[in-house]
Each structure stands twice: as structure tokens, then as C-alpha cells.
Length: 69
Image 1: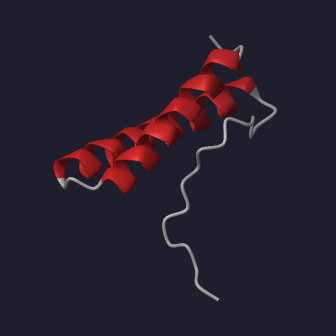
Image 2 (image 1 turned 180 degrees about the horizontal axis):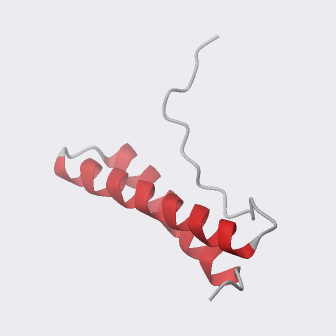
Image 3 (image 1 turned 135 degrees about the vertical axis):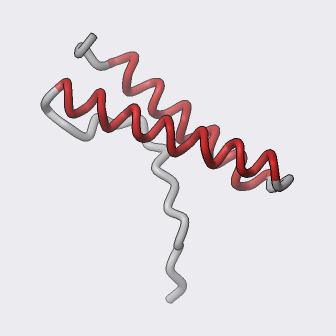
């Protein structure tokens, strides 16, 4: 069975009950996604760029729905 080494976290589902922990986790998701997006762009890797954009968008969505700030 092949293992997917790059497991993009592009789910916008809430992952923490605590709003501060959720905000922190969503921020990390956005940062990780943005890095993948930029690396994909730099190396002309459309798949990585798309995965990064998806993760970044999911993190933004989680932050938008969170009530921490």
C-alpha cells in the first residue's frame, strides 16, 4: 500500500473546542499552505501550488468562523 507522504490538511473543519487553540491551529494551517503555494510557484509545480492554496484557504475559513478575535 502506497503512503501519501504529503498529506495536505485542506479541511476547513474545526479541530479544537478551545477558540484560542483553534485560532493557533488555523494560523499554522495557513502558514503551511502559503509555504507550499510559494514553493510550488517557485519550482513550477502546479500540484504543490494548488495543495498549498487549498490549505491556505481552509485555514482562512477556519479563522473566519472562529470567535477568538
